[in-house]
Amino acid sequence: MRSSTIEFSIKNDNPLKLQSDCVIIGVYEDKKLSDVAESIDTASTGYLSSILKRGDFDGKVDTTLMLHNVPGTESERVLLVGLGKALDFCEKQYCKAVRASVKALVSSGASKAITFLAELPVKQLTIKRKTALLIEVSLDATYKFDAIKKKKETSKKSLITLSINVTANDVREAKSGLANGLALASGVSFTKDLGNLPPNICTPSYLAEQAQLLGKKHDFKVKVLERDELKKLGMGSFLAVSQGSEEPPKFIIMQHLKGRKDQKPIVLVGKGITFDTGGISLKPGSEMDEMKYDMCGAASVLGTFKTIAEMDLPLNVIGIIPTCENMPDGRATRPGDVLTSMSGLTIEVLNTDAEGRLILCDALTYAERFEPSAVVDIATLTGACVIALGHHASGLFSNNDDLAKELLQAGEVALDRAWHMPMWDDYQSLLDSNFADIANIGGRAAGSITAACFLSRFAKKYDWAHLDIAGTAWKSGKEKGGTGRPVSLLTAFLVNRADSSEK
Image (cartoon, rainbow, N blue to C red; front, side, top):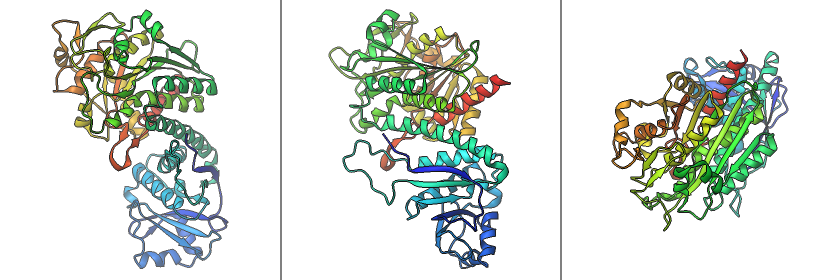
């Protein structure tokens, strides 16, 4: 669907003797040069210093200045990248500098470049992590989705070769970081691609096909359950959501089994509503096109599986994706209907637009058969979570504080943050029903919390966490498109689990 714009490699070269289209170096605020910039300044008899003294470049984060034919160098160009204040230079500033440098590079005439940004000292970051981040940020900055456009976007060149320069002692670790960065970027891009596809292409059947292709390519098991099999399993809640659509529902099970045979698996469950009209409780027409993103939980599970497969992560991971459309039809579920879930609990449907929890509850019950060490579901579940947290953090709910802490820490490491929300028993009574065991909504107040409380009723037999990604999975407005979140968080969580299991 999308071709990479950058080809990466690891180098250990002298910046003064490089025959390249462009050398990328950092400059701090207050006219302070990085170590590599100092060496170029010395070789050019103060050429860079003179530019800074004249005030042509201030070194602030997100700024760049392209120089041509710098004395003392054999490169055609030298790109100065602002790093901000040296004392404040941390992971976030590093990522901003990388993003700014790549954007300046792709808009220039350079096709072959070398960056020295990975050599910069960044608080608490190893060379492996710096290299991986450079890859991830670079590919995110250059991501384009034009697979279904007749007129493709044109650029000055189709491919940039970007070498990452490190010290001789760091080459091995940097190469490991390169591999990890490419794997994560691959999964994130795949997740974006799936979300950005229109709903007439990205149907439940399409998601099932993509899972099967992924399994075939990376040699992991994939099984797709059809409507008749779901009926036999008693998934009345999931099937009720799908019954208003012409598109058949699919229940996808993926198995990445690279851990020890006695290792209990981690189960990822992704909400896969490929289009959400709200059903009979119809949504307003404004911005309903964005409801194609209601399968981003499913897309993030697929993207995470792509990443861990490319990493060959030594861990047992199960992916479960219930996927269907939520459409209004003569056969569609009505407000007031009572459904029987796979667990046997009956559910009164008060609002058919609260359908995500209705498909997830049966998937959470199905997950019991794997005797998991933990289950994490990922869903664009509630608008209430967007009101609570905006677009910066995903909402995190859990029945186990240690699991919640693991996920929060993974989010911090991956720069893909979540926030731990309350799920006290006080909220459970809001889901009381006069006619069934549970209602599918609890009213406007604490909407994201009562949605999590609903799911918790079906996750009592294992450690469970729920990520509400309604505010983080995609952007609206001019930059409308999938973000690929929370693939980075999930990957960091799984990598940490794999590392812990080997100790």
